[in-house]
Length: 128
Image (cartoon, rainbow, N blue to C red; front, side, top):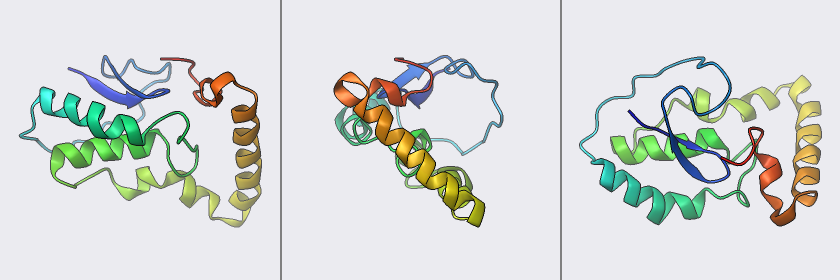
């Protein structure tokens, strides 16, 4: 009954309603023996330090990487499919994607420089 996601830091919300976009795909990853308390403690004690707005990178350290780390904790190192975690890198490894890579990197650099504290501008859905 809870969805864990990254939005300017670790967040929790109602499943399927955390961002203003329709759910494209639901994956059944398995079952866990972890408690909600253990997950909350892991997020606050480990993941919150690793997944910060300052460390966010649209291509290589994004919300999919955060979701992968949550899944790995819950499922004993079995994370999300690599096709989801690495979707940006895979798309930008094509010849057409190489041109987009520098444009995205420049856009991200400008957003970091143009925001107080360097973080809020990187979340396309605003501060969550």
